[in-house]
Image (cartoon, rainbow, N blue to C red):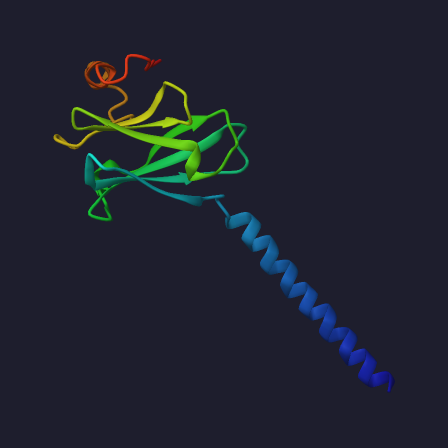
Length: 152
């Protein structure tokens, strides 16, 4: 009887040890990525913008955007990031708009585009962040459709 209880106790300890190792491995390797989903607009259904919440350890909500064409990621853009100060993590918190062949995403009813994508030329801001003229050109085109928009 003693031997049987000792074996069960050792088995439980070994099981807890491996569960602890697995849990620590998950914590160390976890990046906090959570796919929120894809946004599309009826003006151009060929393109979608995928939004991923990048990390829960940031004070702001870090977001990664991927441009999809026919449900496939356009690889030339790599990772495009933006952030909001809000922690609501649902796709319904974002709005996608389209004007003059430019798709742009805003946070809820705010008037600042987080990302702007020129469908015709396949150019993306903030991917082209260093090119201020490009940023201004895109913004000047979309502000014609929504004069309330603002940009940093």
